Length: 248
Image 1: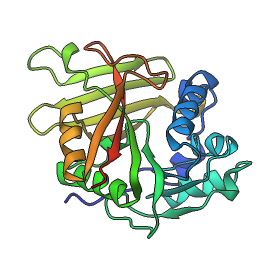
Image 2: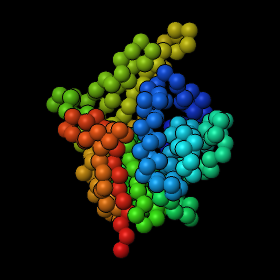
Image 3: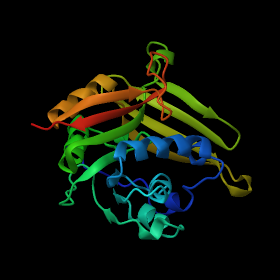
């Protein structure tokens, strides 16, 4: 299994909460929290890769008891500095191996984070971790993008996904290994050139995730094109999938 690596140290954690980033907007967060609260159905939830509490804090405010784990101590520390973040139990742990010794009604993993696990074996282990922390009938939710290969000309490797003066984002694909490296070029302060931050991912198809779920004793219950439960289609850029722990 590929060992996990923390790409979210203090320098990243301190600037992670960007109020101009759409993922922090109410238009994104409200349907996310609405759906997760509905799926938790009053039970407790575990967020894998809880980060700075972008989702966990508003979900807690809805009355759902949320716990979390994250590989990055800096991200957890950033969450604890926020109003409401200091009351959420969170531990530093690897989601491929973590075992908290208790179960939940809901386990969730958002914003492409399954791709941060860069081996197939490791991604299977994430599903096994989720299953180990679910009651019978509990749900595991993943939000992840659909690989953008339809727009990649044959033989090309690079796909720009954000082109702005302040930020140039380019995804680099390897279609043999299912490896994706996301390159972020940003303008340094005072105009002193560009900084580069590159993060590796393993992109994964919905059908492959369903097989991983079966290995972990989970069955697909829903697949939507976004948190608002719109249908998942051939044109969807991401999916929100829900698997349920099978009871005998």
